[in-house]
Image 1 (cartoon, protein in one colour):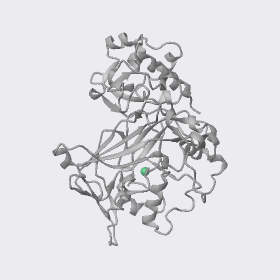
Image 2 (cartoon, helix red, strand yellow; image 1 turned 90 degrees about the vertical axis):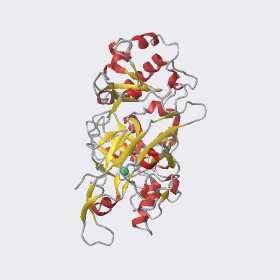
Image 3 (cartoon, helix red, strand yellow; image 1 turned 120 degrees about the horizontal axis):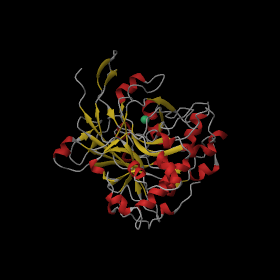
Image 4 (tube, protein in one colour; image 1 turned 60 degrees about the vertical axis):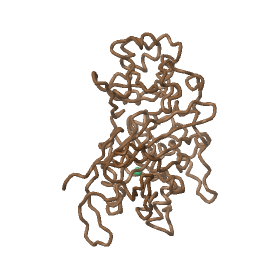
Length: 441
Ligand code: MN
């Protein structure tokens, strides 16, 4: 069970004025990322309001003291892998120290304001990078409504395969094509079997889709290959982001039997650049929703009472779409879907315990996708496959345009926010990707 401390106090305010009431990054959040400014190389930072706190510059200025010096020294490189590989206490010590420096009436305020090089940067003037060297990317299928709805298109009478409620389903995806928001994603080419045809051909996908998932960052895990017990599997999670698992449905349908998704998924995956830590999310933990009465009990290695009591995450999710025509008309992006992460059938700890049960090694900087998160109705769908029923029921936008799948110039934004009475709301920051035209053959 994660404890709450003074860093969560809803009354806590920052001398960085834009942080107070910020929709994503108030002082109670303090997510970790890697950024660069025009005059420097990529380094570790913490988002605070509309600014970024440069951990390395602060360390070199001598602002950390005591144990926090050790924690900050794990953040001197160009990725977070070193901190990810350290005991989670290091991350907590860093959070407490940064919270103290950025809170009102901090002794560090004057030093931070006047330091050269700048310790505090305008986020709008910085570039975000991948927060870690990613060794492995595993994509799960834990969104129950997505599994049912997508399964129904293939097997109307029997949408869920018999294993679904026993074993967390996943496939090994590509770490090499994960990039951070904002991203430009080129429409992929691939092999498809057009409807009614007997021979496949290679062409640009005509069914390009997004998938709204949560990304689960792995920290210090099991470099020895020992299975990770469910009771400590939650401690292996370093943090969370949003993850857009771009998908070519026509390529997927033709290639996916019998080994599962392949090139339909490895065009690109776009993640939000900031890692929201388990500490920031502590107030937003929730009980894992009860299984349906007829569902099987999970095997003991997947069951932990404390995990069931507060191992799920109450996160609201929104998908926005902006077409090139809307952009030209200076119209705002339109919200086309909203749901929450409580419809995941497995907790993050269950995913970790299952992934390692066979001795598979999880390394700091690995990432999981939860699988597409959807509610059980159209406007809570986490992808267009569900939202338009594979293009059968096109979506009509406020601009009058219709969408079966994504068109060139479309911009997809994923947002995630946590709210709970008595606590400061926090968010994940935007995850944005724009579709660019396919390469000429
Ligand atoms: Mn996926």
